[in-house]
Image (cartoon, rainbow, N blue to C red; front, top):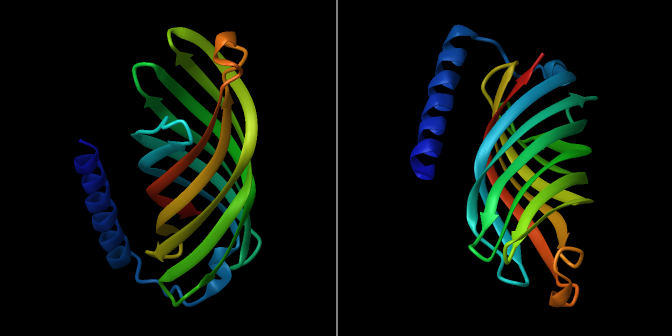
Length: 196
């Protein structure tokens, strides 16, 4: 199901890119369009890894808003829905907000590479052995990405991002001796970005 959804998204983005390139025979050699506000969205897989084997493969959605100061630096905020993950004994639903910096450079007129990182604020609703609770905390994130410029407004991107989160269940289940799930949320996503 996920593979079909991702394949459909890739085909739609590719078709849109070809249509946009045909409709807008613009030169992207002029980097002035890289300055200013942009919005974007992405969909991809989430890998949850922790030292307690609290892991699974799930979907993740992200919406971002940013401002590029030039072709090299931008500030970017996002909303991330990490979805549901876990198993019958311990499961969680996490979403959060990020704010950070993005730095990159153009390889050529079409391809760009970038790195990003910053602060993550998140909320997790979880159930451990039938005990339900929620948890608010903050962490850090860092990622790498590759962008393909369709024209001066549209860019397709692929990103791999690591979110560092600790799920402390000590308050929920005292007899687990303050067990802590140290969890890394790893997201690989395909998305699209629109520059105003």
